[in-house]
Image (tube, rainbow, N blue to C red; front, side, top):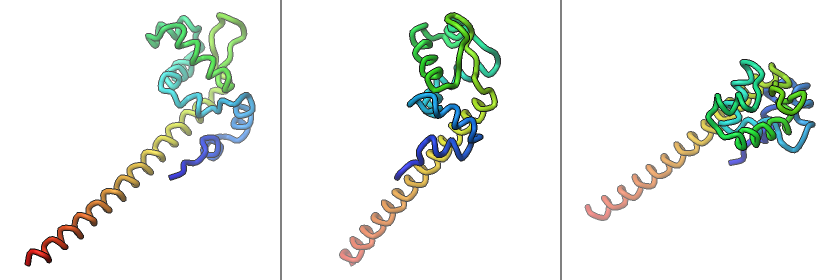
Length: 142
C-alpha cells in the first residue's frame, strides 16, 4: 500500500499560504516536525503561551539536550521561532499550527483505517482458505 505524501495531505487539509510559507523553510516538512509525540506536546504547550527552553524542560520532564533537539527541528521546519538566544519560543503561525496538528491527526486516522482494512482483508483470505481446506478434508473422509 502506498501512503499519500505528507505534504500532499497537509496541503489538502491546511491553508495553502501556510503550506507555502512553512514548506519553503527547509527539508524538514511541518508534518515530519510534529510526527514525534514529544514535539506534539511541546506545540500544545506553546499554543497556551510562549515558553523558554527551561520552562519546557520543567513542564515536560525532559532533559535540556532533548528539548533543544526538538526545538531545533521545530525551528528548522519554520513552526517556532525566538527573537534571541534564551528568549521564549513562540509559534510562527498559531492558526497554522492548529491546522498542522489537525492534519497530523487526520493522517494518523487515515493510516489507521487503511491498516485496519488491510488486516480485515487478510483475515477474510485466511478464513476462506481455512474453509476450503476443511471442505476438502471432509470430502476425502466421506
